[in-house]
Amino acid sequence: MLFASGKEPAKVREAGLAKWYYSLTDADRVKLGRYLDYADASSKGAFMASVEMQAVEDHNYAFAVLVGEHALAESLTPAERFSANEGLVLAYFNLPDYDSCVAACDTGLAQLRDPAVMEALRAKNRGQLPAVLHCRSCKLNVVVGVRYDYDEGERILDQYLADGLIDAEELFYRKQSIKIFRLQKTFDGIYAIKEKDQ
Image 1 (cartoon, helix red, strand yellow):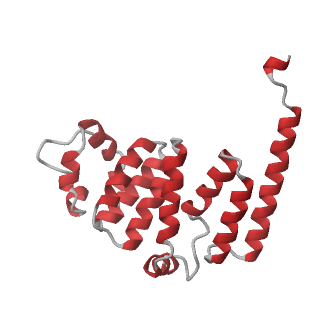
Image 2: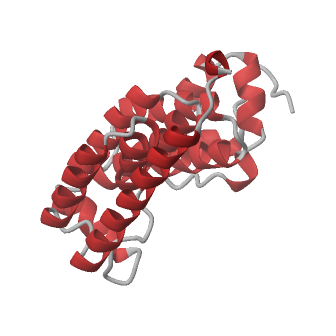
């Protein structure tokens, strides 16, 4: 859907993002139009985070990065900044841009040390942390699943326990998963036949 010049969509106007909208290319305005029906226009942060996550679900990762990076340049509440960063974590991971993903994970983990962020997350989840925190899980996915740095993975898990992001039971389960994955990769290496060896 193309938008008439000089007239931004109502939800963009309601969220206070008309200036950003007109900075987009025509192609990016069309992409944005695909997500407007389900966009949350209650604030700039809510709008951008909701568009960002829809773009991720639509596998439109580059557009999600465009939205998320702009969101972080806006004046947002700590909780809104965390939400925008969570979308960036997923977008970078799926591009894949692992260096940027880990950097975004580190940003998110630092944001979780802000009581305002933790309170907002718990308020939306009956007093508990959400089961899914992309900054927490994607960092491990990159470190262990992509880079095969098992010792660093275990160190990260110990830090998660110290920061209250996992409990002792989950620590044990996740460390066991790393050990199993490590063994599997070892066996894969033993039985792999390289083309040059044939």
